[in-house]
Amino acid sequence: MTGDPNDSTGRETVTRAFRVAYDGREYAGFQRQPHAHTVADALLGALADHGVVEPGEGPTHATPPGYAAAGRTDAGVSAVAQTVAFEAPTWLTPRAFNGHLPGSVRVWAAADVEDGFHATHDAVRRTYRYHLYAPSADAADAPADPARRDPEHAVDDDRFRAALARFDGEHDFHNLTTDETGTVRDLDARAVREGDTLVVELAADGFPRALVRRVVAAARAVGRGTADLAWIDRLLAAEPVPGERGVGPAPPEPLVLWDVTYPEAAFAVDPEAAESARVAFGERHRDARHAATATGAVRDRLFSAIKER
Image (cartoon, rainbow, N blue to C red; front, side):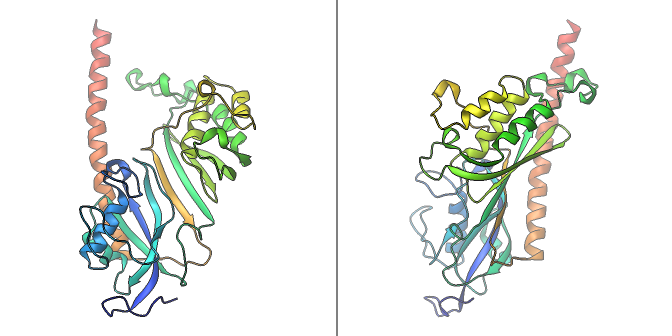
């Protein structure tokens, strides 16, 4: 399970995989890209600060041997189990890693793995959860306060689940991605209602670009009554769908990379690092709730003004 017994400075090294949680709202995605701030920049910057890699010009730090990540999440997408692996000094635990990371990026677990482990290619299953704001269209479940009703986003759960069920199983999703290869996938799709939110869980061995967000958008259209199940069948057909009949991706911010499965990796939670992550994300959640409370108050006041006319 150990890699090259010594790194360039003579320290013992091991091939280690790290679980990474991040709030993607302030990043231009995971993967490094020119003139944009990404999650990978934060991770590699922390490794440079630790002396694990050579610092580069601006954010373009070097990568350690064997470095790879489980997936390339888009701008705005968050994660709780993104996984990066590389040859690391044995002292680089999750809590040590966090010493040079911002609060929006936290490492919370690690696994020592065999030489040659690749965080992208060795993953056998990836799970995403999309937290769709979708108040129930059922009048019995509608908020009693008229100011809080949101018919524009209301969704019929039965129609939504019927649409989602069409995507379950093996299909060629070429009409739901810009990718030209790797479009055939065996998808597990389900949804659970939590108040005004439908938590949509999609799992597969891998995902073409923006597939999760397009599946959610298509199911939402059926759930809102602006499309029917025949349209879903057309999206899954072999013939290309013209642009005006296609579906754009749902917004990225409610999407979370929830889990990545590696059969041979046994991740151990670092209690101190996990608690640090819990606190950091708790603070970010609190701040978001405060902002939502303010905008909700503005909404209610405007509703009252309209009624008073």
